[in-house]
Image (tube, rainbow, N blue to C red; front, side, top):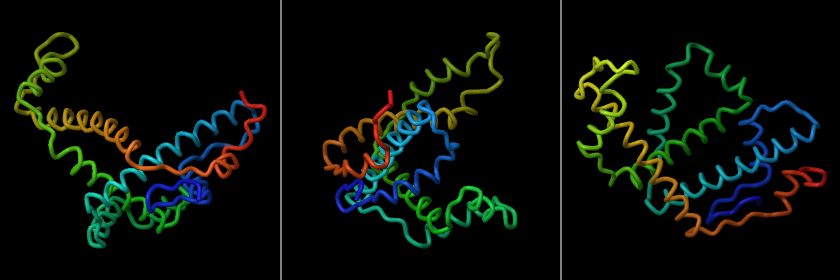
Length: 201
């Protein structure tokens, strides 16, 4: 294993395949490239661990994605791709359909966790909406009155403020989950992935 959190295990092979699928960096032996690549792998590992935290949280909240829900999500995405362009997209990204579908299912599951765990209790007041409107929409950059009414923009502002609050709550929740879930990292395997630090800055 490379990373273990609860019942979840990510192998070194899993990490390398996922990283390569997400990053199309040109091969380069320069010191600058090695440092950049190492930083990219560290960031990717951090993102992978966050994802594993959210999947553990999904188990606690008993949140699942049914086959029908996944099939509907796939159909919604595919309808935006004419003819064979969807398969061509997978080929260009060098990703199998099974891997793409698994990634989609994970993303939907995490969105459901965030909505249930963080979004359910959020409140956006009329004052919040009015303040945001006054700051961003009431006047244009030249100081002229905006053509949009508060009513027209209410839904847009509500969604924006809600997203901001969820993002803030998400950061706090991740810091809580770091303390809650034990993260096991196989250091020898990680050293193999990032390569020897000898000669790096």
